[in-house]
Image 1 (cartoon, rainbow, N blue to C red):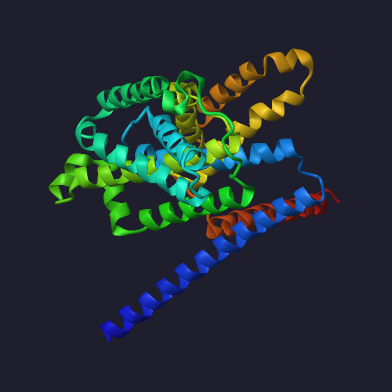
Image 2: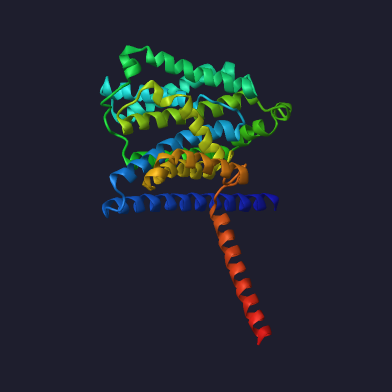
Length: 348
């Protein structure tokens, strides 16, 4: 009897999983179809399309950082360094060795993962501020090394990189990274990763190899940054060491914190808002346009005061959550209408 009940429960869970994946895939396809429709109708011009591509690229890097910072609880401040490794690795493969774009993109991602594995084991033994300082130092070391390699252009950077990062490729990469994180975090490995964030000592006491799971999160997150770097190199057609400096790492942290650490949906929202907002402020009057970055900073401060946990905190946007929100809104609307009618009758 218990076996039959367990089988039925397992079948229900599998069915729910397939339904969830089908809905997610459908939503993603609708978003892509709408973007294509806007481009064909001329509503989305080249400038807007460029912003959308930029959002997608940095969304991949921010998702990787959220895995390390938000879900594993490891403060890293050199995430842009892995973007630079992926960008230069991919650009060299395409430009100097005439490799296909897909191969060069994979090579840049793998190179970032290898570098993360090499430095991850020693530095992930550190915690808190010490880990942040080490990763910050690593980012500066990578920048200085690239500046002194003439083969990749040195301080001048690399120019005339082939334009390969189309909207479809970026969209597929974003969807793939999103699905990878969703599957990872809903698995036993994902629960082990999140246990490190909650209480590393307790996790070790329960027999969880915290070093292994910190390394896993660090390598996957850095690989995603490398993928984003490769896409950026073939999107911007020019890269230099300063492109991926500390400021870029700080921007990525801001995307994660604003959206909500430990929320994949929050990272998507945070990245979209923080990239689109400065560009939208360009359309203001000349006085406001000159101070648009000041307005941008002010809005961020206000956001952090009223929503210190970010837009979503650690929550996720789900189909079930959207349905619940709609029902609550409809219930409030109906209850307010009923109260208005009762007040009218009482007045009569």
